[in-house]
Amino acid sequence: MQGQLKAMPVRPDVDSLDLRPSARALEVREQLVDFMHTKVFPAEAAYEAHRAEKGLHDSSVPPVVEELKAEAKSRGLWNLFLPSESGLSQLDYAGLAEITGWSLHLAPEATNGQAPDTGNMELLHMFATREQSERWLTPLLNGEIRSAFAMTEPDVASSDATNIQTTITRDGDDYVISGRKWWTSGAADPRCELLIVMGKTDVDAERHRQ
Ligand SMILES: Cc1cc2nc3c(=O)[nH]c(=O)nc-3n(C[C@H](O)[C@H](O)[C@H](O)COP(=O)(O)OP(=O)(O)OC[C@H]3O[C@@H](n4cnc5c(N)ncnc54)[C@H](O)[C@@H]3O)c2cc1C
Image (cartoon, rainbow, N blue to C red):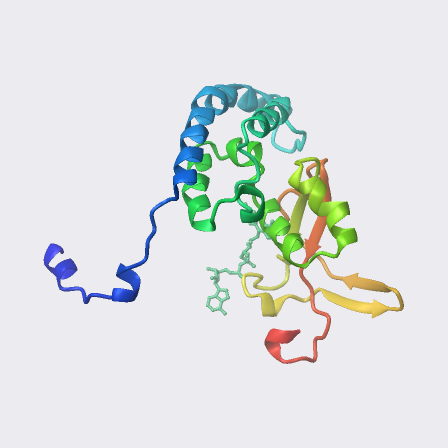
C-alpha cells in the first residue's frame, strides 16, 4: 500500500493548496473546545433526561438548549458558519464544525450552526429581499426562530431534484403550491416559522430548469 502511495503522480495545483487554519480560527478553536468541556458535555445529561421524560414524539425544546445558546453568544461563539458574520473562511469553519459534532444534539444548535438552518440562512443571505431578510434572516441569525427545508416527497426518488412533483403556479399576486412533502427535519419544532420548499414553476422547461 505504501509503495502505491509513493507512486502517485505529483499534482502541483493540489499539493500547493494551503489548508492550514487561520490564526483567528485557532483562537476560536481553543474557545470552542473550552465551551464543549465546561458547558456542553455537562449539559448532555439534562438534555437526555428531557428527551427520555417527554418521549419519542415530543418536539419541545429542552431548556438547557436555550441556556447554552445564551452562553455561546456571550462567548462570541455564534454564527461561525457565515463568513460575513464570523470573519472566518468556510475552510476555517469546517474544522470548527467538526468540534461541534462532538455533541451533535447540543453544540451545533448552541452555536447557531445547525442544519437545516445554516443552509437556509446562507440562501436568505444571498438571495432574500430586504423584507424577507428582516422577517426571517435576522431572527434566524439571532436564534429566535428555526426553519426547515422541504424537498423529499413520498412518491418519487427525491435524492434527484428533477423528480420533484410539487408545482408552484403563479396566480395573480400569489403562488399556488401543490404537492406533498415528508421527512422535513425540524418542521414540528414549535419555533419553526419558515419552510423553504422545493418545487417546479415550469414543468415543460428543459429538465434541469424546471
Ligand atoms: C433523519 C433524516 C432527516 C431528513 N431530513 C430531511 C429534510 O429536512 N428535508 C427533506 O426534504 N428530506 C429530508 N430527509 C429525506 C432524505 O433527504 C431523503 O430520504 C433522501 O434525499 C433520499 O431520497 P429518497 O428517500 O427518495 O431516496 P431515493 O431518491 O429513492 O434514493 C434511494 C437510493 O437510490 C439511489 N438512486 C436514486 N436515484 C437513482 C438513479 N437514478 N440512479 C442510481 N441510483 C439512484 C440513491 O442514491 C439512494 O442510494 C431526511 C431523511 C432522514 C433519514
